[in-house]
Image (cartoon, rainbow, N blue to C red; front, side, top):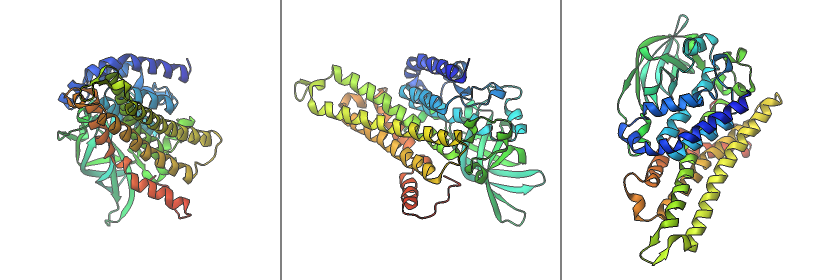
Length: 392
């Protein structure tokens, strides 16, 4: 069976789980983490294998299929969609590490999952054969379901000069999870803190973010698929916006269903007969569709550059970021519009619409969704100024 057919089976399996994820949405918030049963069910569909190398039991699927699955999951439960997206994309980056690290992660168990916190909150010092890492990182979504974590850290030499920014792959016995996640949105993501006391990390378990930004990694020697030649920040920022588009998709469906049965007492009319409500639905639906279409078209375009053996131009990377941050904004604007028009019953605890509203706004504050920075970079490039593509 080819990767496309296998991915379609995963998507079908995910769709079968959506009613269950909707029913568990309240429980997910109460637990402040995605239930273990949900993670296990996703694992059984093959979802977490979509971007994993075939050498380690993965499907090396089209990332568009991965994003479609994430969108579906998030339409049923925002927290489950968010965690699925984050945990599900990490196998792609693990594939860029030295094969020594890949074997350490998947050699004995190819179902192992990895969480992350990429902001360079940690400090690493160059030592013989690797680095000594320490620090505290926030917002490691889904860390309770992971056996390893990817952590960002600034690297210093023996004289104290900063020489690099790297991602460090750290096993579970080398870090502590601190339970701090008490929030109003994405409450079920379990995005707790990670603490590492001084510990040695071999060089093979690290990646320079400068090299990653140039679409390079030692793992490409063994994982030769075009999938692993795509641009890190393009894939990972799309990973953050996709669940928000999924939340908007779910909110749209919920709003339409509510309006079909709602009578507006103040006006004595069926809400579905209100022409202004119809216009609002049409506008929101278009915004959601536009957000999704632009994101996926940009990924397709990047894939085409890779397939032709061409370097991905800076302009294309920056356009992905432009449409990614605006895609988040379009999705949230759509949710806001629908929420405003849904009436007081949408405010009740347990309703999907208010949860989607809270979850989407919580996702909006992620660093990847900082609109001004991404848009400024795009505009500066359009005006002919140099923009460093390494981190974007």
